Amino acid sequence: MSIDVTGLNKKFGDFVALEDVNVTIPTGQLTALLGPSGGGKSTLLRIIAGLEKADTGSVSIEGVEATHLPAQKRNVGFVFQHYAVFKHMTVAKNVAFGLEIRKRPKDEVEHRVQELLKLVHLSQFAHRLPSQLSGGQRQRMALARALAVEPSVLLLDEPFGALDAKVRKELRDWLRRLHDDVHVTTVFVTHDQEEALEVADEIVVINEGRVEQVGTPDQLYDEPANDFVMSFLGEVTHLGGVSLRPHDIELDSSPRLAGGVEGTISRMVRIGFEVRLTVLTVDGDEVSVVVTRAHARTHGLAEGGTVWLTPAAGATVVPRMAAAV
Amino acid sequence: MIWFSALVLIPLAAVVVTAIDGGWDVFWSTITNGQTAAAIRLTVFTALGVTAVNVVMGPLIAWVLVRDRFWGKSVLEVMIDIPFALPTIVAGLVLLSLYGTDSPIGVDIANQRPAVFLAFLFVTLPFVVRMVQPVLEELDRDVEEAAASLGASRLTTFRRIILPSLTPAITAGAALSFARGVSEYGSLVLLSGNLPFKTEVTSVRILSSIENDNVAAAAAVATVLLAISLAVIVLLDLIQRRVAARG
Image (tube, rainbow over all chains, first blue to last red):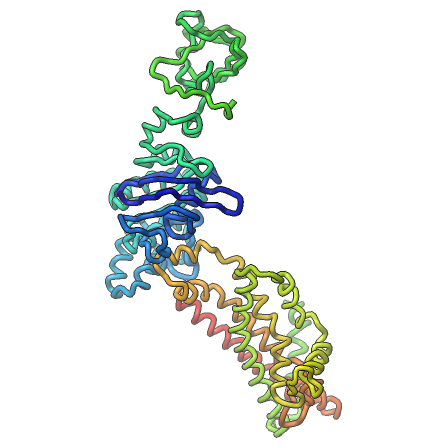
């Protein structure tokens, strides 16, 4: 296993950033640390990189005990949200930095820089300054710079967080393809569930300093360990004593199935092919339901109409958390 | 441009014109006059020396102010500006009472050359510090961390990443500090004693020329100072470009 984190605790003053975190990150995969802002995921990444010191616990990278190694000796590539470019150096010099301080022969450095710039599609910008590049280009340069030293793991801290939505999406796809080519163990931090679900092989969900669940995107979406993971990975509504997805509720205009909950449609909005309903049940719950437009038409749904709700067969259902009420 | 001309260029031109009014020979004999030449040498070399000290100490003090946390930091922050804010003659008085003949700490440098050096050092202290400080505050910690994760030692990071970013500010501070040194009057007249050939600086020399109704001589000295200041500023700019390009 590439990165092993055991029993990690970290406090900033009174604020608990990480609490007894144990994670194992597999070699050669693309892993996402996913969670809300301030949940501790960046702190965990920075501790792995040696940029922050844990209060207790240990970190090992590729089987090497790294807890007390300084950042310089960990052989870790790190990419920052705001690019952290060396402003006074050209793109090529930025990428060459790690190799130059390792005193590699000049022609080797040049060759490797060319190779990397080609990989990140910046060959024609080699002699520009970072200030002449767009945000997306700067981040690709930062990535090439981190890859230049052939790190055993590549860590990215909200790498696309400062970019606009379109570039973000492009870079996300590009990172996935790059990883398929390079295969270096990669961990990236994100608070965007769509980004994590789309790009990662494996997702570690972190909230309030604790690991909530570890699994593949499918596992997390289909078998969330708790209400938090479920609500973080998609829309959630509550019916009876359980949480479930709005599209996993079956809706009938007559009490056809046993256990159906009766309610009145209080709001109905059509967005493209789907229809979003808010149903006020006789138990006093306000339930969101998503049905297809065809379904709504066959049942003749309209605001004020009476319907019966049941969880769909095979729906992902999680007992409702007290705090979420 | 008009504003700049009215305020700076025209008066400067007037000084130069006055200086060469009496012809090249008069100009030359004035500035090669033993006493004047000694004053110019003293002023320029001391100002250079002080600037060199400031170039090293200034960034160091700025670093401490920006990066370290310690008790009394906010007080120090304010104190840095005192030499700048203080009327120079008050600074002179302060220096005289501390390092004069009746020095309470037993250091008597009155009427000696170190007095000039000390006075220059005192009044020019804030320049480099205040120029470097905001740049250092703006500097991303990310960038240093990026260098560290690429394997750079702290020294390498400082030399290759931080220093090039600070160079323009250090240069600007050095230029100001040199200019202030050359023009200094108030803070050193009391302590240095203004002894000809020993502790007399150019500004004192100019004043005494004026008092003897020799405006041409005063203007000649002023012109030389002008030329030297210009040369130093250009030189510092060249150094800055070279350091910045080295990266």
